[in-house]
Length: 293
Image 1: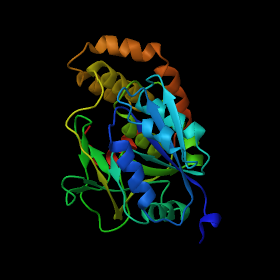
Image 2: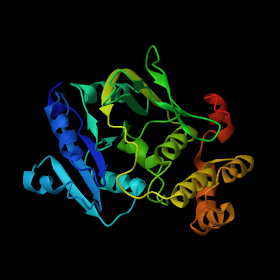
Image 3: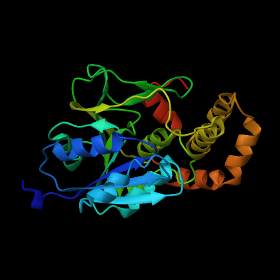
Image 4: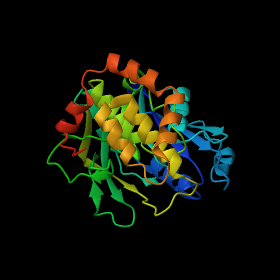
């Protein structure tokens, strides 16, 4: 299959204060072999370190640079998708290293309808033998990396660091939550929404990318924003007992204030829309993946 015969893939990279990581990620991407034509959409979400300045100098027709005034991780991904021309989206962090034909192997899974969304194994850049294969959740909705499965396998959560989904499915589930704030729970909410709407999320254990795991964010993340996103996710998808359980996880802010904020910004209406369209409920999801929450 030649590049001219393959569907266009849009690689969407949200960026905020990434330093030299943006350059190394894109250079790694360009140096990898693939049979697929692709474009790169970089969404610079109000970086203050000039990390995307080189893109203006590079002037590559393959790269579209979008700058924003600080809209947050979920909104930046949605904005990238809105500007994308491809039939398939790959969402990537701006601190990755890739291997030859990684795009091809992920695309094969979706094109053959083995999955609606698929992620590679994600390894630590500093310890490449440490690899996670998709994610699950613990009793506090914390992320747990899965061990290597023997073959293509379902996963509760597609890691936002790198995953592929078709434009069609992305649009049918409504993309990332449009009410989310700066950072937190984007990948979890999107993956839960895919499963509840009847779509499947898989990990491809034969594909590996390298990811720079950092101890701190290169921008400010406050508890209130993370809690807001968590509770908005709960109101959008969870039963009332699980909403109450989520409120108990709020320890560094006032749960009542977070809840009022969530409800003021349309979470109840979104809940009604989602419940009307979903195929499964949250009990099905948590039982399906044996998540003790």
